[in-house]
Image 1 (cartoon, rainbow, N blue to C red):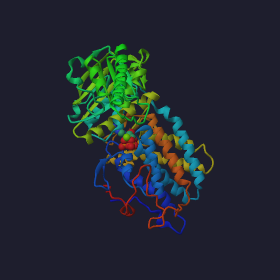
Image 2: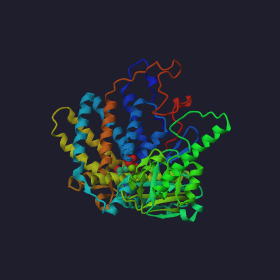
Image 3: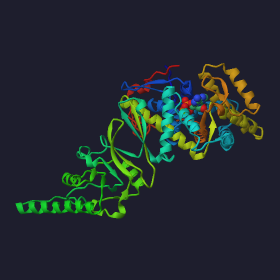
Image 4: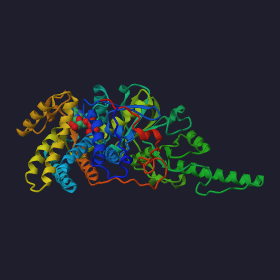
Length: 551
Ligand code: ADP
Ligand code: MG
């Protein structure tokens, strides 16, 4: 069990000690160190309500534990940014912050001013980010193998090897079917069935079980498949009344009632007539459709789908080039779109409508299967990360050798660069170079290798120009280009940027002051709400963490 918290309350009355400020982020890094890389161990996080989560992703661990010390919370925030922007590299960022602050502690003891340290770190970071491209290898849509290894690497350690290969394959095949545009690829997770039943389906799959309902469409054989259908998209309720007017109608006698009925009948007829005149075959509505309208349309062979999910409606709109109108009476031939076909299929155990061969955008759906909802959701997240990694790699068009190879190469670069800096910042630049070595070092450590030997050999090989040598899965030193271990440039770039920003923020703090304004009680000054939507913490939080870290 490891205690990460350092309560700022303890320092009340005196100036906060340096270790109280710099210590917590390092403690977070120390806790996550064992999770890095292909041999990373998992952490079991026991939530206050007893839920147990086993994960080795830096951001999901930090998401779930109470990080109370304010400077440790800055690290948590950095991982959130990292996860949101590039979906990977969170542990790397945390480790770098830990190393940079650890080095800063010695520099401070030796009399260096925090500003010089921050300046030195900033110069070194800028230097490394400029050089990333130099170590990269091109990647294109045609390198399926390379794309698969990028996808697999990004989810390293989150599932077994066979499943990881399958996730990577699904992500790449899905993207291939969607013209490598991730916005044209929709992920659907369906519990039940085995992972092997997951598939890539060409077209937009509209899930009829969960997101949409339609009266008995599947029992009507003529409504099961349309070729070249004319499709209408409506964003509002299709009801007999005027939905734009809110108010009450007071009915005083039978004649009034008749009038209302007549009005509704007319409205219904107007909608039905306009849909018939426009020769609409399929009508997708984001809200509900009046039963009578739906029945009449179905009997005349129009497939009506109500409560279509907004994202599905948007995807269909883009794919077929149809305009989504806000009222059924606004439909005209210009707002309609056409697809190659719309048909009913059972996809991943769920009744679905497939909109295929769309003229404007090629669409694909990745149907993922997993035993329980929990498993299928996690599979969804893993595959989404694979898709993201491939997207990021293709956006830049080049990738970096992983396994700590690039970090090592950059470390040596920065060391050389330090010589060109004359003033005190040079010490900080050198410290930054050392900090970068924590990536290959931790990978070797987690693979159970002899650290000194591995690092010395690695340094020597890099010295001899082998800049793509890194630590492989078994802890051996190998050329990562040959082993196919690649990661998107954007990920390492974001790690470096976030690590600098976070350590600079922490280093600029010289005191933590408690604001007593919130409440006068026992826990005055503690911010009980961690982040947006955070639950207020109960008293037991204050004594540490309700979770065990296994080392
Ligand atoms: P992060 O949260 O930083 O992404 P990970 O646990 O995913 O942490 O580990 C990422 C590190 O592991 C990167 O440095 C990456 O190069 C390395 N890595 C991932 N897969 C492999 C592999 N198959 N062989 C060697 N290194 C790998
Ligand atoms: Mg990762």
